[in-house]
Length: 208
Ligand SMILES: [Zn+2]
Ligand SMILES: [Zn+2]
Ligand SMILES: [Zn+2]
Image (cartoon, rainbow, N blue to C red):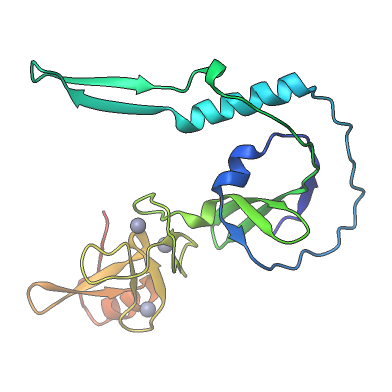
């Protein structure tokens, strides 16, 4: 695991502070390297311009509708710059943490913003299922063969499995199987698959 890196920089974080989930309590270790605080160099106008552009980006929507001629139209609705009023701005320093993790073969990155009370998650690769690329909001599964993250096992169309022999957690790419009766597949990890193969069973990978 790489060391934690702390970057103190000036950024308008309005978008992140509005949107991202908070981690309630987390003990951050004391850092053993110097922390630099660069001077604020943005004027009030450039801060509010930057904030307005973030707001425009966040609230721009593509809508579709049917006209009287029954034809479908699409239109991009965007708040106009002159309709957004910033009444006040406040500049604050927020330490930003970048954490690089390695689980077996897979590397993950996390970016967090910290204040006195809580930590804000800006980006965390481990929140996404490697199979469907969707965000996982609840329990995640870490594949014990390759380190992939996946949705937890379910009965149909599962993105992960548990080895039926040893219980090892597996992503879909690392899952092997042997036929059980005619239609069922008995899911196995590579190691348990090898044991089955040594007993002349036909073991296949779930994904080609
Ligand atoms: Zn998934
Ligand atoms: Zn895997
Ligand atoms: Zn196994």
